[in-house]
Length: 117
View (cartoon, rainbow, N blue to C red):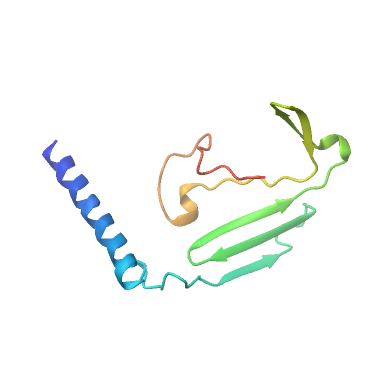
């Protein structure tokens, strides 16, 4: 119990210090300035059996995006409070912990891991 309290206090102290460093000196924990963005690399046509695919890499984070075309009957149906609507295009992706070199549970995606359309 004491070990957990010490770890929690240490983590809190580190988070506060990192925030303070960014606020006062304008530097992130990895040394980048606050207005500096890591370059992004992309490679299209990665997978041969889908209508479109690409690999995006920024720093140590990678994602594969794929596209498959369907007919008009395949639209996403959205039940809203003011009635039903349909979307012809939506992007759905998952963001497992391994994308950023972390470990964690793998199962049904949580709020952070689900993409937006």
